[in-house]
Image (cartoon, rainbow, N blue to C red; front, top):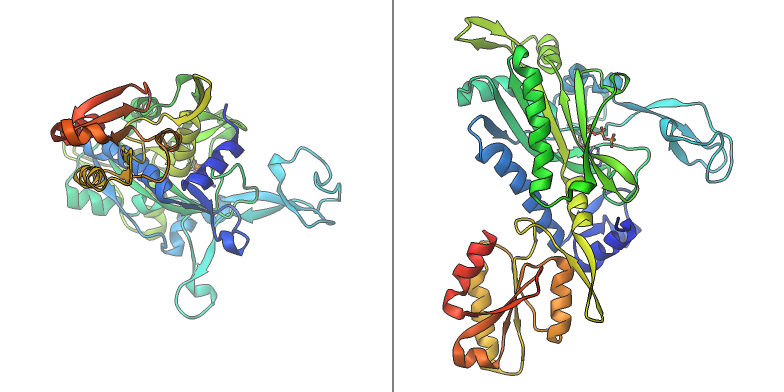
Length: 431
Ligand code: ATP
């Protein structure tokens, strides 16, 4: 498995991911996505949205606020339960998560620990100008609650019948005690969450369906079967709201770790919000002529963890003749740059013009790069390293035969394609 430091340095060098506020010394466990990172991340989110919303007729989308009424977090159990136990080292003052500790004294300085204390992972903030208790609010630690509190709104406005789901992608914030492993555990991150509502007696079958559906999604977009597996939660590991849960795990450099969790949450959330808000969150089944509280199946994935897994999985070092080739062999829909236009000579104005015209013709529906700042060998290496699907070189012959050379990232095979046909050719390959 690829070293995490190799990926993080490639990410920084090539503009996928930077440390937040780097010029000020950085902000711990917050990351900024650069020009290539934002493309890759958008591609991941779009593919999730397509498979969960567009390609089905039983799921609607939602984009709820990050700030919510403070009672939401009381009802959901986050105020009481969303806590980790922490200990502080009395000497060096470093803080550790109690459940992850393997030593009785500080691993940094062998100092003595304080006793374990609960630490709520939610970030607090204040609404309005008064820093008083009444205006206290939280940055959401998950997107799911925005869906539960809008259950009735979506049901009424979209006239859905059970079973149906509500999908949302958005930021979540957790004041994690132990962070690290690059973007794997961040304090600010994005989630892709689906809450799928079903009749109670159909919920177990539905749970199984979504576990498979989500597992296959990662494989469909290129994750090697050897690097991904399902892990069922033991009964004593289940969250307070869950009847069953599977984690989709990826073989990260630090070992098998969670990429996404699929939980059977029963009717816990709708009943809790109904109880605390005093509003009915039931569903009237016209066929059976009864009012029920649906059960819910929740596939909850991390955008940043998916991006990291796709990066790690795509990273290859190959030997080509006597050279080392580094290539990110992303699935074509994930590749941040679909094509690069590379003029072979930059001191021939008519050649540069043709290359620029080709570039302008191609760009628009996807990201295309134009690069003439190095020799062709170097330009190919640059594009391989960021996973660009096609390199299009414009040479002196192109001026005569109106053809260009198209090089495929994976096979490295080169083909002469007529300029007239180029857009159609690339569109068909990447769209
Ligand atoms: P972990 O056990 O790794 O802390 P979790 O079980 O608390 O994760 P969930 O609450 O199930 O995670 O959140 C759903 C998904 O959100 C996770 O599978 C993960 O992909 C993502 N996620 C959760 N916490 C973080 C974080 N701190 N940084 C990045 N992604 C996260």
